[in-house]
Length: 467
Image 1 (cartoon, one colour):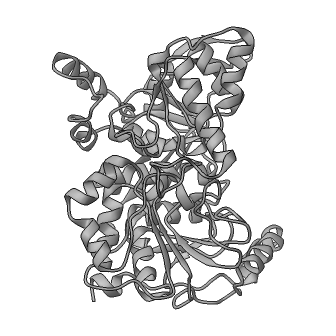
Image 2 (cartoon, helix red, strand yellow; image 1 turned 180 degrees about the vertical axis):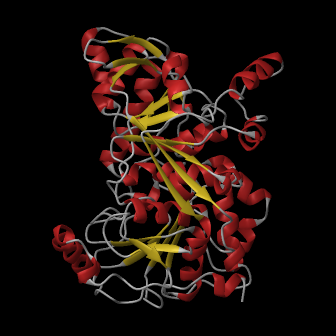
């Protein structure tokens, strides 16, 4: 019987299947951060247990960390306690810990791939919904709850219902100025935030095959925003070349053996998915959101939908979202003033994102009314920025680089957008108060963010790069 990529990896990790069809699934890699792990470690202590396979567990603080002065004690007492607790738990249980100032510190979903800690064919979990990012390397990766973190710590297994499978096919070539973030926001807008609920998505097609690894990580990162359990892309030459020189990838004959296995990880030609959908790349333009969920997205040159175009069941939430954002149905987004720009997060905190941002601001100046937070996703990304001279380009344009962390993706650290202010953000969620109580978030890619940063308003980046 022909199998999908998801089915191949899932079946290779089945330990047992219960009478109700629940699967005991072996987990290759568990990532732990400071927010969802404390109770899990406390549960181990209460039961007198130790992690079953400690070498399979990586601990990194990222949500609560400040992005300035990381060499100093954390000021916020709650954040400090959470970070200190993760370090103590990692030390007490003999786990790998990449703390602040460690050369491999950063956002978990950036650090894992860039160090080869996530590999094709793996099962990967973390107490964070955007664990779907790691699926870009051809892995089954998904977020779990705190009780499941404890289960994985204790047994290196998890109990899961097998999700349905969906393939999203994207064919054609992207237009100039369209980024992977635009692809993801377009797909979410078309699928809606619940369109992939109950499914594990495989992204396929000519457009996907042409993407870089950084672009694939961005696309898979946002899978959860259309309700999917996770997203994945079959490993290929792009994947193998990306992984070959990573710190934790196999070497020598071990590499050759691993590569031979990875090359079998694809959906068979006649494999049957529970659902398939098809899109054209040429239909995608630079995207942004106008509401309070990632599915409320549109092309930058379009207008906010009119009320009569919204399904009757969704009109109340539509009105509520626009009231919160201070927008009106039928309005264009172009030329709307903004206050903050955030480049970073596990969605767009990689080197390619900073290259893209710098390509727009080079030779220009930050708009006077803009507060900009440019936050590398890891210390390695920060080093790449300096090595390529992008830090000088950004400084000449009036921008300041901060230190790695989740930063303004969510209001769990010092980088908060004030109430009523508009932020063009390259992060993944625009819920009410996501970036700070009362803050108003407009999700976009790094090119749209850069254009807003130098003009102080929503601007089509294609007028900069291709005029």
